[in-house]
Length: 120
Image (cartoon, rainbow, N blue to C red):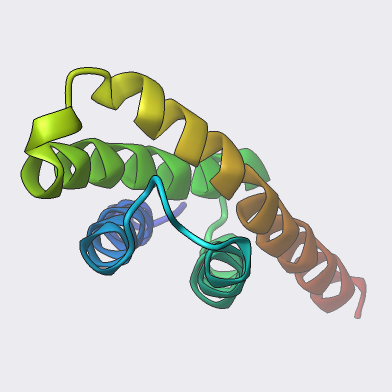
């Protein structure tokens, strides 16, 4: 049984990462290299660790990270970009779709690690 702290930590990582990312990067002018680097550097290891530490289904950790990222993106767009925050749920959904790739990559690597550890 997974402790609730693992899923809460996964949610918090998504929220904190998106708040910091959008505090320092304008979502309209973000360069692809910056997005790819930070998303792969933070979200992939986070989802990998959640998958390795979790006993639940693999998708639950990925959903927790993505839900936290969505909530944090909504909050950061409202807080930091209030002048253009009228469509913040749509913008947050688009950024969450972009975040699916590194999260699914980390979950897949975590699945391989768990599978290899259980083979012994």
